[in-house]
Length: 532
Ligand code: 16G
Ligand code: ZN
Image 1 (cartoon, rainbow, N blue to C red):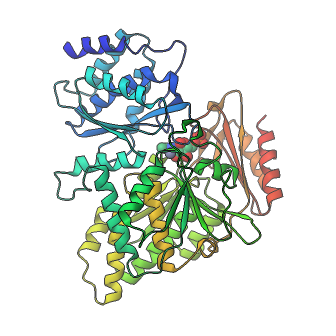
Image 2: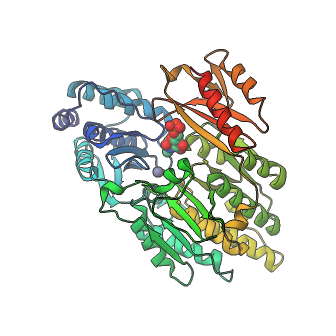
Image 3: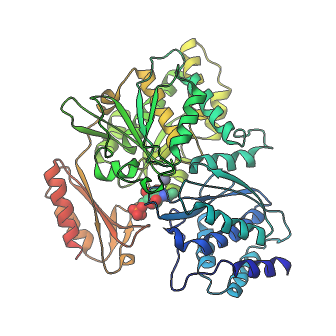
């Protein structure tokens, strides 16, 4: 009908490059920006369908390639509660992207509508935003064509961080409920975080000064705006690597991914000893912290360190408050063995381990009253369950100490972006905790000592031959390989190693940790060699 002929007509303006096979992976579609025009157009069609399937609830579309190089770009969908796209729809996304002709695309569109009993006359609402990449505006134009062709209503939120868009999607969809998540605007986001931060840190020690490397991406200007809303009386922050107009510098020798994978300072930064530093990634959904000591030795405070700090703080607040609830932590196989040991043996908080990828961690965290989840790479957040929120809101404190703890917990729930990991919100969380403890980065780092570790990327003939179990910690296939890895690991003190196929690159990743740097490196090399 009319929608279908519109789709065919518009699709002709966004031809699919020949020979390229697309796949909606853990982080949506992500590749060279120049190869994405048809993909983004088609994602527009799918977003319209997804909204219709959910009775017109608002769906988000984010155009970003996160920590990837400047010429890459990407696109991913956000579900109504600010969560990642439901996994069963990833297949449709992949099918749409790979349809050979305009005709085939309209057939796929109709097939999905029929299979899922979607009424094509139902209203459809989509909002979108992009990061600072040069290819962004053209991709936005393609997206708009897709949304228009499918007859969706849409709103352009221009340049945002990924977590800001997740936040706004959730705000819109909870607007008419008894518990709206917040005001659905960028200013609403800044105000919510700023207000919560001021309540949490009121009367506490002046937080340490923090210097933030914004990876020359969207996080720079947004963080400055957030800091302005908070005010310099509460937050002393210094934003560097914030040249968003120098598009070729995005993520170049700086940013959270660079610092975590290279385990060193961003190029050009020279911190004084014990000064707190942090790096964001290109769309500001990841953050890692670091400092140098008096011998100028670099110390990384990664996602595991953030999770441990947050779990410790929340656990203690719960204990003081007397509210009956429990905090738990979700990690992946990449979590440093020392962090898992600290959480289990010292803090005595339960841990769940899931496969890599935000959606797995997020869902597992929802099973705790308060679920802290972080990937070692610095992506993570804290989720407060509905029942935990109710328990806190209705709690009748017996003394000022209890009242204080409950107020702090409730303000933390507002300070933390609960839709997805958010570098800006996580930054404020860490600073607030350090301020409560009157700690600097060194005191934070003392909780436990990371085991030396090494991550190696190995190109193999067929990465799909690598099948895992037990949250990616053990290989089931190729047969016999796990036994060989076990035999190697046994030879190293505190040794641990696992192999998994990457979800974002055509390679497998080998992780190894052991008691010393030398042993960790050696184990990583030996396990890598055993794959060949
Ligand atoms: C994606 C994931 C990230 C994960 C990474 C692993 C999301 C939004 N992002 O970027 O969480 O750490 O993939 O990459 O889920 P890999 O599979 O190549 O090791
Ligand atoms: Zn990112």
